[in-house]
Length: 214
Image (cartoon, one colour):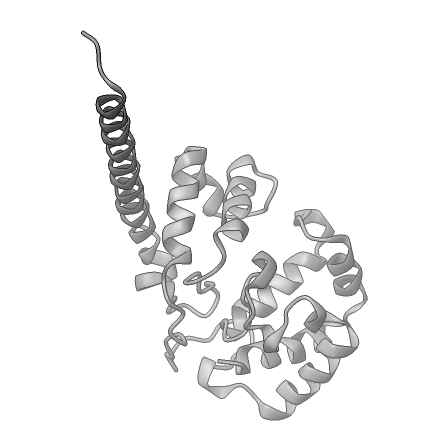
C-alpha cells in the first residue's frame, strides 16, 4: 500500500496525538497512585499533610525534590528514624517520586492547634513565647539560618523545606537530632557547623521563632 504525503502526515499526526493522550493518561495515573500512597501518611502526618502531634512535622507543600532524597535516606538507613525507615523500604524509587509529588501539591494550611498536646517543651502550639521568638529571630540571623530559610522560614525556593509554622516540639527535637553525632543525620556542612555551636537555650529560642511564623 502506498500512502501519499498528505496521508503520511495524517498518520503521523494521529500517532503524536495518541502519544500525548497516553502520556496524559499515564500522568493522571501516576498522580492518582501518588495521592493514594500519600494518603497513607495521614495516620502520623495528618490529613493532607498537616500533623496534629507536636513532635510530628507538617509535610504539606514541602518541595518534592526535598522529600524524595529524604525518603530514600530513610529507606537506606542513612537518615535516622524510628518508623520511617521501615515504611520507606516498602516503596520503589518511582513510588517515592509519585508520593512526594502528591505531598508537594498539598496546600500548607497553618496547622492544627491542640492545647492538650505538648511534649518536650511543655508549651502548646498556641503558646509560643513572643520574647523567646524575638530572641530566636535575632539568633537565627546571627547564625545565618535565615540565609537559606528565607522569608521567616516560609520559603521553599531551591527545594528548601519550610520550617516556619512547624510545631515547637518538632523543631526542637529535630535540631537536637542534628547536634547528636551518634545519629549521623545527613545535613549540609554549614548547617552542622552552626548547630554544633548552638546551645540548648539558643535552639529553644530559634524553635519559638520558626514556630511563631504561621
